Image (cartoon, rainbow, N blue to C red; front, side):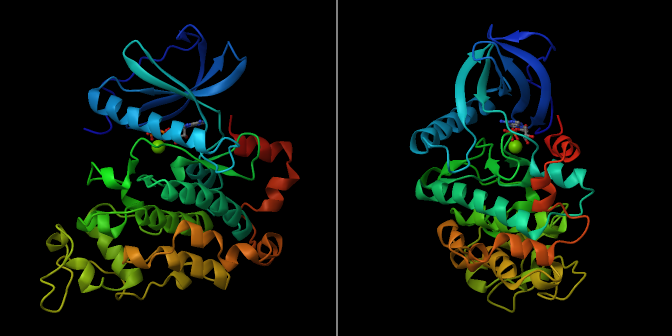
Amino acid sequence: DFDDDKGDYKIVFGDDIHYRYEILDILGKGSFGQVIKVQDHLRKKPIALKIIKSRQRYTEQARIEIELLKLFRNIDVENKYNIVHLEDDFVFRGHVMITFELLGLNLYELLKRNSFRGLSVGLVKRFSYNVLQSLALLAKNYVIHCDLKPENVLLSDTNLMSVKLIDFGSSCYINQRVYTYIQSRFYRAPEVVLGIPYTSAIDIWSFGCILVELYTGIPIFPAKNEKELINFIVEVLGMPPVSLIIQGTRSQIFFSDPSEKVNLLESNLKKAPGSRTIRSILKGADENFIQMIEGCIQWEPKCRITAINALKSPWFIENVETASKTTTRRCKISIEDITKHTPQLQKFIAGR
Ligand code: ADP
Ligand code: MG
């Protein structure tokens, strides 16, 4: 079972962990355990502490998370690739614990606090650039994040205009893929669903889904199960190429025999295949933005844009401020909202 509390560390407010970290607040809870805000009495500053459940499966995966975060800490000494900074790791009362720099709200919380009305293009662009920098560094080092979603992208605590990537608890090296059941469903790439060996391109798929969600405020593929997910994708992209279907060990769950004319086995389409275009979902957004998303949301992993190339996209070359001015709608959170730095907004976004 994924969401049970078994193996969770018992949090007692005011208690000290490892004779050093005083528990202040709970920041998040996930499948792997809990993240709490603590006061580091040695360095005299608040930090984030991730407490892993005391079960073997989670402990082993935490070892990989720690190894990868240390790798990025060594490569990225200047901390410019927007990957959360790992400070320390230790075992306390049978739990693996990891300390991190303290970050702000995650992007899901940010969207929620604005009643899911989305962010301005200018702000989406800034956050995208940060995430792509992280993804480019990952891909260069043959690492796949495997759980890219708004909950795992956090506002920086010191610079509200930038975000950092967290949660390497599902990540792996390209040549050491262990799990086939990865990624959160809304952001799960088709090759993962179909059972095809995956690459860094699965992170780019998730990234494309996140771009749509940041702009519109709601997920592009909010599927209740994998069959519905495939249906939703078909509505946007049309039927997948036969060359993709025949590679999948799980394709027969979703599609009829590809030697005939391919059909969905359980068709629940509300719209004709390929008729719910990205353009129609993003109504009114600028062309470069639409093209960026179209480059990410593609059936064929090989056809998706890479992080390195996405960073060179014309979308980032056109002026951020102009773009945000022409497309900002009332109710969307904009760069101007954030740069004004009104105490109210600061409070709203920092959230704690
Ligand atoms: P899990 O693997 O259980 O999903 P995460 O590492 O994603 O664990 O952390 C769960 C949540 O805790 C995040 O979505 C975020 O809201 C919060 N969180 C994690 N790390 C930090 C941090 N460094 N600073 C502030 N909040 C954090
Ligand atoms: Mg997470």
